[in-house]
Length: 486
Image 1 (tube, rainbow, N blue to C red):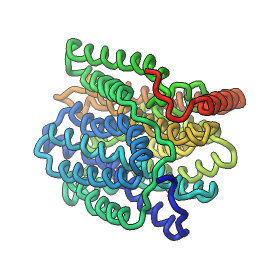
Image 2: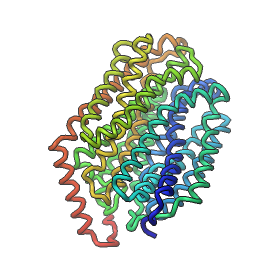
Image 3: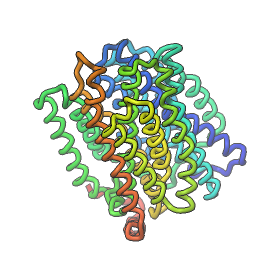
């Protein structure tokens, strides 16, 4: 079974709507849950590290499995993998809503993420194979991007409403009817498709990626509270896994991560920009939620409302950024994003913006503008110049970078906060303890600004063209059915 059969325009829009439903529940879950953190902390008696794990257990598993899920969908059937993802995600959501303690919740979040990893990359493959006309495809991907903006914007408000009216467990209940509806609609309306020539599995590369991401995150989160004897072995495992990937992956004909991609300056820049931007998002939401509820004493609903000055510009700027990428290229949106995100973090780091509404609201608005502009250019920059046969893999690396960034943002900012905060005077010490974290976020914004400017000029485009030529010539030289060299 190869590409999808040609569908009617109405059927194509229905397929797009079904794919967007899966994206909505996966994205909404991440942002909505942040607002529920303080009430979860009280009910489950969680430490700061415990709260970090409720977010990071999900994003970490998602980051580790995205590329595997995408290639599995190409190989065994995208519809099959997508439906499996919906079932696993819904079961994980149900288990999360019933979690009796923090350890169970973290474990069930990982189950959720296994399902979530099968949704977004596979849905993107379904969309690109459904919309074969380039202009139609661009519009469909624009709708997909808008749904990300809607979920980011609505997340804190929806989360606040649910936590305040029912409780934090209701955040997971919302996924069940949406997941069931998407499952039934997929079964009825989405045709099956596979890639004509799917990539072979890379189990060694997959294990090395999981070891790298997991050990690195654990060592960062546990560093403030655990001793060196606990943390150092995990740091060593992370380093060994990284060296293993650098040695092993170039020796495979079809690696999980093709390191040759990184010879393209726009691709390398997009990867680091994605990690930095989403680290900023993860850290920003983590600090803001804890401050608004635990320090200012707001309930979850009012904390969600206070985040609207961030959410609304994020939602409005995302489509504007997409249009700018189409007309002017990715450099301008990335520079705007970098300036706004850096300025926002500096307001909090240098001027304690959270302590006054006159500075808090501009800080939130600036971050919303910055993050709204950053998302569209990342995927565009990652895939631009790549051979079409490699575009899916390049987009998967960009998606993985986003999840890894969010994981590291929560891990690093939470660790910085935990090391500076006093349990006996939480409210009094919070702003001071958070200040180094805000400086870290300012540095992330600066990375977006500098790399956005440097990796999208004529020199950078030249490296992308040379990389694409090398990849295409390597594909032509490789015989069909060639085995791996390892």
